[in-house]
Length: 119
Image 1 (cartoon, rainbow, N blue to C red):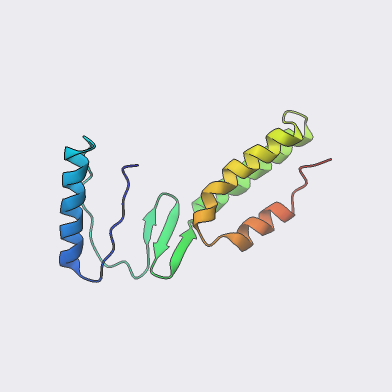
Image 2: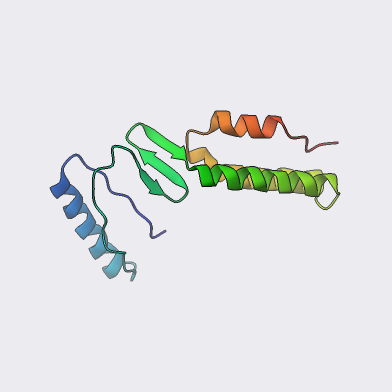
C-alpha cells in the first residue's frame, strides 16, 4: 500500500513524519511517494473512497453509490442463476468487507435488508 495519511496537531511533526516515511519508502521499499499535500483537515480528508475526519471514518457518496450498484448486480445475477447462493454470499461479503473500516453499519444494513439473495 502506498497511500498514507499523516495527522498531527503540530504541523512540524507532520513534516518530520512525512520525511521519515519518504526515507523508509525509498530506502526499504524502493517506492517513491507523491509530493505531500498539507492543510487543515477539520472537514476531513478524502482517502481511498472514505472521508477521514477527527471523529471517525465515513463513506464518500461516490463509494455509497458504487456499493449499491454492486449489490444490485450481485442480486440480479443470483436471481438469474448466474451466481449460486454461495457465490452471491461470497461476493456480498467481499464487497462489504471494504466498508467495515467506516462508520457504515446503518447504511450497509439499509441496503442489505432490502435485498433477497436466497430462494
